[in-house]
Image 1 (cartoon, rainbow, N blue to C red):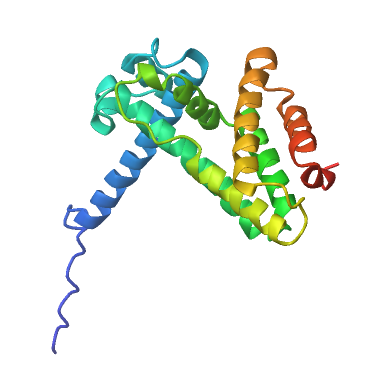
Image 2: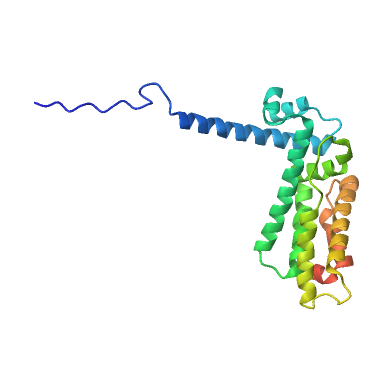
Length: 220
């Protein structure tokens, strides 16, 4: 009587884990650790500022070793760069969400500023990025150029509104966008210093009313 050959033992049965699975787990852990470190750096920079924060401070906040921080980031300056890049990424995400909402141009401008105000009030990464931009002269690394994409988005929506006759003919969309963005980021700084950003939404509403009344009408 023929005997059927037994099935070959699996890699697990042989005591050898699949290499691709092991590599995947290591990559997941590395990504998770990097995220922890980045969040901890944002918290440290937001609350204490770049000059006084050390890599050891970040490691302790993240709950990892100092070596784990250096595995992902060469130094404190690299941490600041990464936080600043994440800050601008988040601003871009807000802009994309507003774009996908398919609002009328002036409503989109108001929505963008109000959503950004909420992010400044509630998101540590955003608060950290804003503080790092103020301290950029103290950071020995090149940070992203501030607010370019944000201003371009506002300019685009104001240009659409102008072309549709929703703004006075004398209004320059590009100049108005610069005024709005400058006023917004100045207001968030003042709100931070004076009230820990608790009143930032009210300050943004005032800006919209003063600079683009037609945009603020939809947010009343």
